[in-house]
Image 1 (cartoon, rainbow, N blue to C red):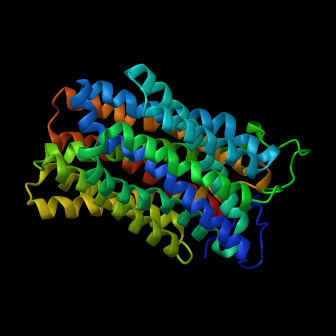
Image 2 (image 1 turned 90 degrees about the vertical axis):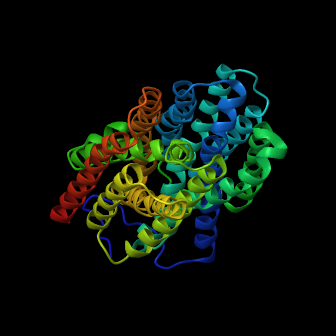
Image 3 (image 1 turned 120 degrees about the vertical axis):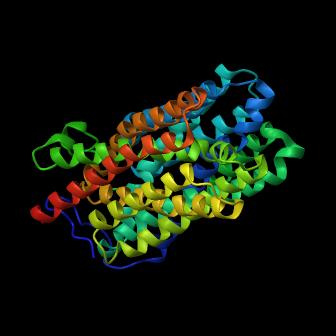
Length: 408
């Protein structure tokens, strides 16, 4: 069972309640909407590039637009959840996501598309931080890692069905309609959140000076852990969003057809769901500081195999699935670790700023990948270069946990 570090609030229910289960389930569903809104762009990217005549570098910029929005949402909107409650901020985030996705279906230029992706990203970055804090506060302390981890599993779970749906609907409906459909799914979650989330979600911290205060993250008790978490999120998202954004295109480069390339993306996300769910249950018994680095190291090996080995279609798809299990399953262990790092009065602020700082890595990852692919860098060297930040992420997680163990 995970140990709560010294200085971290362990406040929460003594046991699971029906409302606690429902809130975590709602957060899972909202994270599914996040998964649809983010990954749909990677699935429609080949068609969008073909219809608009976009190069890899321009497409990389569009991928990074959503990540820029996530940084804005995580750093500047999500901390408001510590002062005004989780419910109000989650509803605001859902409104941003819905409006941005539906409007994306009507854009006529790259600039308009870029701006809409920023708006969608701002909503996603906000809701990710608020949901992680809310899930941690709705679960018993012994199952906090499980609750936060399972919420993260909603993202790849939805991405699987997004890939399958795109394969079926893209030829007949076009990518514009698919973006509008995705926005409508997010709209449905707004009334559910309005009804289920109590008006007093989150701690009553409005009058506490540390509530939503970024300076609290750098107090002596939290400075080292904050910097290590930022490093883990930065390096991890640099690799994760490179893979998520480009996996269909990379699979095509590896010799698959466009349809099989989309299936490779769907299988990657199926593996991500399996890996995240497995990590969440294992985190109840195993320390995250050992589990996460082990999974990320295995992901580096799988990435090298994917990029360098000549394989059949079946083996290529299998390795794509394995990368999802190890990479995203391992990386998502960072969020339960982050939720247990900070007390309730600035938990959303801590997670939000980790998301915001980390998104700079997520912006760099797809953009750099686009430039490297445009420069026709060999596939083995491309994957090998991304193993370096992946191992740096594993090292940061290892040291965060080691520091936690010594202080606890």
